[in-house]
Image (cartoon, rainbow, N blue to C red; front, side):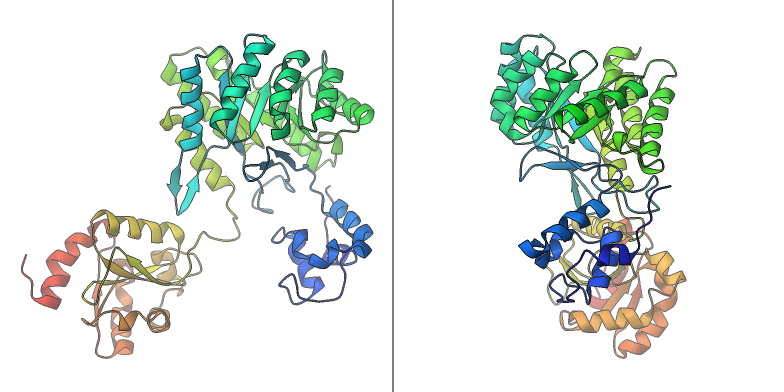
Amino acid sequence: MPKILRPLDVYKYLPQTNCGECGESSCMAFAAKLIERQVSVEKCTPLSEPKYGKKLKALLEVLRSPVKEVTIGIPPNAITIGGKDVMYRHELTWRHPTALMIDVHDEMEEEELIKRVKFVNDFSFIRIGRELKLDGIAVRCVSDDSKKFSTAVSTVLKHTQLPLVLCSYNPTVLEEALTIAGDKKPLIYAANKQNWKEMAELSSKYKCPLVVSAPGDLSLLKSLTVSIKKYYNLDDFVLDPGTFVDGGTILDTISMFSVLRYAAIEGEDSDVGYPLLGVPAAVWSLFDGNDDEKRLMESIVASSLMSRYADILILHSIDVWPILPVIVWRDCVYTDPRVPPSVKPGLYEIGKPNEMSPLLVTANFALTYYIVKDDVERNKIDAWLVVVDTEGTSVQSAVAGKKLTAENIYETMVSSGAMEKVQHKTVIIPGYAARLSGELEDLLKDWRVFVGPRDSADIKQFLEKIWKQEVFGEKQ
């Protein structure tokens, strides 16, 4: 079983001065948050002093995750993968979301290669107020020609600052590419039983993380990792157990990923305690189907491997529809299950509201807030939006759980200054909060409370057919 840390296990390596520079009331409180991964060691600034050097080193060892963190690329675009502490995200939030890389290869026409790189650079999808993006480029050597591969890598570097994976089993080909890209700290793919010594030397020389690959053979994968660690003193590895997608072999792939992660976390086997790499792009060469079927299968494989511990995935399709479910699923898997997504309570402006604009109320559950905001913006409505602290729960749940009450709506209106923003003295509460209207009117005294629609998509119709007529006498 994995070790269970207690605050005292961490506290003994802290300065124990209770200085408060970390923002916590005491070193013990800071220790508890370190265990929960809610803060980083860097927050304790005194630990950077030379006199605490030994304590810092010991603390980092104590806090080291069963799955080591590995960084690819350089700031400000570097990505960190791994760093997992538990098998299941409900036990303790999974950190460092799975990196999604799109592949290019050195036999592509320059125009096509640049098009794919541009797609990765520009891809952006907003979900619940967060911008979801792709993470980098995997450059594959298909030609086995050092010059062609280096030219492709050089072209990619001219058009992106994102992290790279350099893919070839030929050490000579990779070394020439590393003379161009080595200072960007790419991930080197891959060391296998034929070339592991040469690949380890490249990893050591250019100080780049290294993929160790043994498709379908977990014993060999571990043996290669142990040998490279022993003889080359390296520790920045990513493990590739193979991605099999033809027939029913996807189950074998998922099983291998699960076995490796279980061995690292539950079995405390540090020799396999590294991030895992999957290649859903293999669908395009191994799966029998038309292009749309391959895109669908790639999306399914990517989502499945992400759910079963993949820390980095290499994809091929640059169509939005197969990428979107993968990137949204990643956002779901890597949210903190202990903390509902929420926005800061208070008063928000939508458009350019004035003293005659409607005053709306909603909960601070992020999904609720952004749905309401988007519906109001889409209908070109200038409005004030009062967001009440419901501890990140939706309107219906918050009313049922007494987290959205007449009292906290009133208090938010007062504290945010919402009541001074409008002259019409009316407020519109969500349809699911209808039962709060009478009590809220009692608190607001000379204000009128309207019960709006349950679905924010109907706000425009409600404003035009009911609110404007009742408040301003406008007939529609």
